[in-house]
Length: 149
Image 1: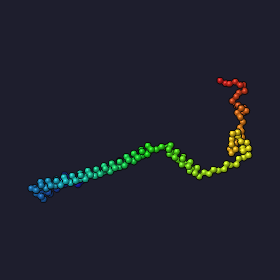
Image 2: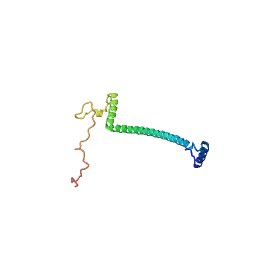
Image 3: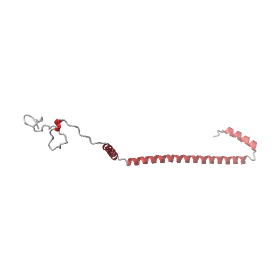
Image 4: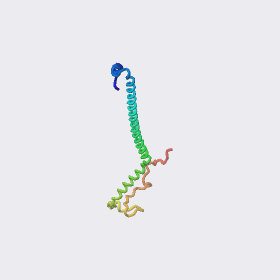
């Protein structure tokens, strides 16, 4: 701290012996030692309080991080992707149907609207009848009539 070597200590001791005198030197050294002890205790107490404050600050940071992690974990426990998807679908459907108007069906060409299919109502358009499977040739049947096993 003060960077005082042995040679400087010897010079200070000789000057103190000459200035104070040999009778009072032990009392002065004792009081200097007591003052040095008090200063050391005060410095140690200050350092201990400082370290305690640092530990408390670190503990507060750790507690904050633990609280943040526990809230994140609880968010994941409450996470239900299917419910969120269903809510989004319901909201989109509600928004889409809220503004929909029933449009008029487009006019059909005469060839589609002339002959309705059996069992179909009059408002549903019908497509031309496709050939029945019994009248169309079967490409899988062979001309020999035999089956390959």
